[in-house]
Length: 223
Image 1 (cartoon, rainbow, N blue to C red):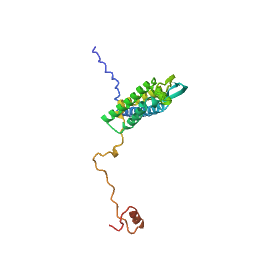
Image 2 (image 1 turned 90 degrees about the horizontal axis):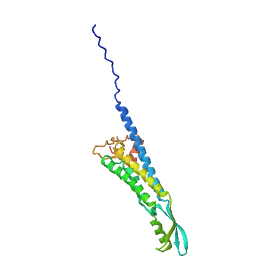
Image 3 (image 1 turned 60 degrees about the vertical axis):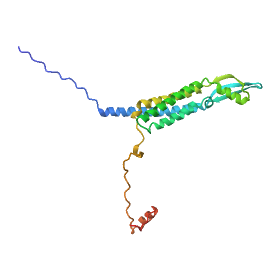
Image 4 (image 1 turned 90 degrees about the vertical axis):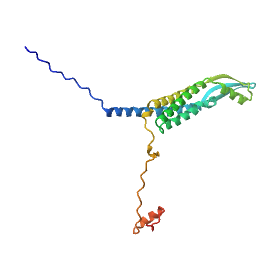
């Protein structure tokens, strides 16, 4: 008996990826990273600036006449975190004004600003020299000492704000090439701009046209 060959079983076809859905997914991811970077950068800078204005170190200055309390805020301890927070804010705005290599450069500046703010704030958490200087100024005695020295938690808060700025910079470095830039309609690209339509001569039989021409500084009697 002659054998019967089995019919081939059709294999299920794999669906081709939809380019439109992939592009939509990329746009959604770009918007999420952009929103996250803006939020982290703005909040981080605000936190650093707020924390820098708070008391970081407290103590008692001991003098011959007794002891009195002293305190210094973050800007007296170190002005670096607040200054770098301002730089970070400027970089966060500037990242949308440039493209290509310029955007990467500004994004790197944003990340470095956050890193510098974090490190300097963390170092200020254990710095007591600013309080010693304040004790010397207040007492007029360079040999004045500070007792009962204590540090508040604000330097740690400032360091956390610097970390947020750093994260914003890292997001800009990773995804910044996908973000939109400022509109190019104000940029000079050498292409001619469409001119205004020529004005028609005012109709002498229409007084309102004559008045409008006078308001524009034109001579309605000139053809």
